[in-house]
Length: 76
Ligand SMILES: [Zn+2]
Image (cartoon, rainbow, N blue to C red):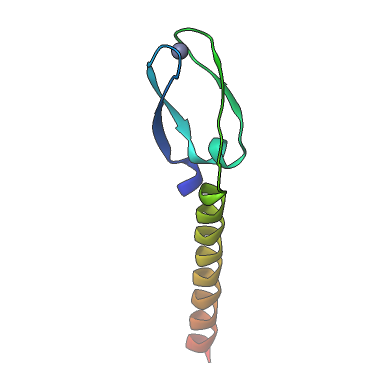
């Protein structure tokens, strides 16, 4: 799933890069830098990550519904 996709961010303090999940950004979670232990508050500033995740979710549901319909039609 897309929400488990990871992107790389860099620590504002020590510039070390590490990976966070898109879901963590959408939830605006706090992560701790493995290098300098600084707490980084992930920010989905305009809500775009959340929106993308939601729209993908919706698409998948629509797809599943379509497949269900195809299945029904097929049986008839
Ligand atoms: Zn750091």
